[in-house]
Amino acid sequence: MPLMELILTRIKAPTWSCRMKFLSGTLSVILIISGFMETAAVHFKVVGPDAPLVAEYDTDLVLPCSLQPNISAVDMTVEWIRTDLPQDDRLVHLYEGQREIYGQQKESYRGRTALFKEELKKGNTSLKLSAVESSDEGDYQCFIQDKSTSWYDDNTLHVKVIGESTVVIRGPNTNTIV
Image (cartoon, rainbow, N blue to C red; front, side):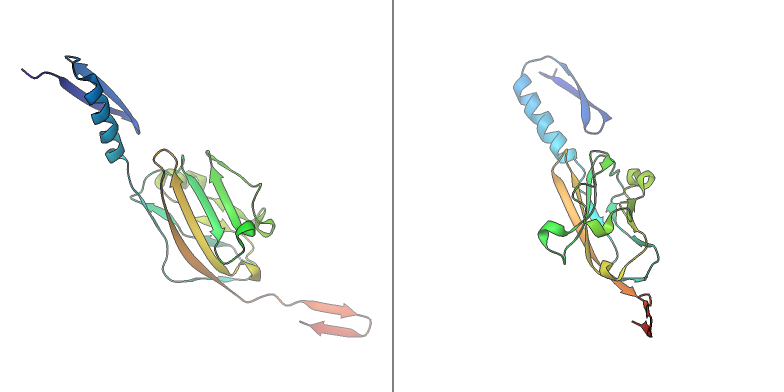
């Protein structure tokens, strides 16, 4: 007959139910459970396209990014930044605490970025960028962190913008196309 019987049941990640018979050795059981829960955490990888994305000026563009395996990102931090811009002015989009936060977002992206919120539960963290501008060309990093385990990963992709619009400057004696 064993000194102790331990039954672990997963209720909802990361919560476990533990039922013990013969309570001797409680301290060692707690350590075993703690170690078991840490190894049970899912370590994901952030994936996206290897090839540069090409966007036409003034169109919408989806920057693909997702978790592998396809686990929910609803409770994670999803941060899109421009790695080719100065540190203090590179936040493109931030999702944290199950909501989008715009306070530190780069001014030129305000009102033009969105995550597909229904897709977050499937691990899809792609970003929609509306009305692409020539200044949107550059390197974008999709950074995802699971706050419950401190695990994080990122993926970087390049965006190329083509076909800038034509600007006509009109004056009393001129019709100049720039």
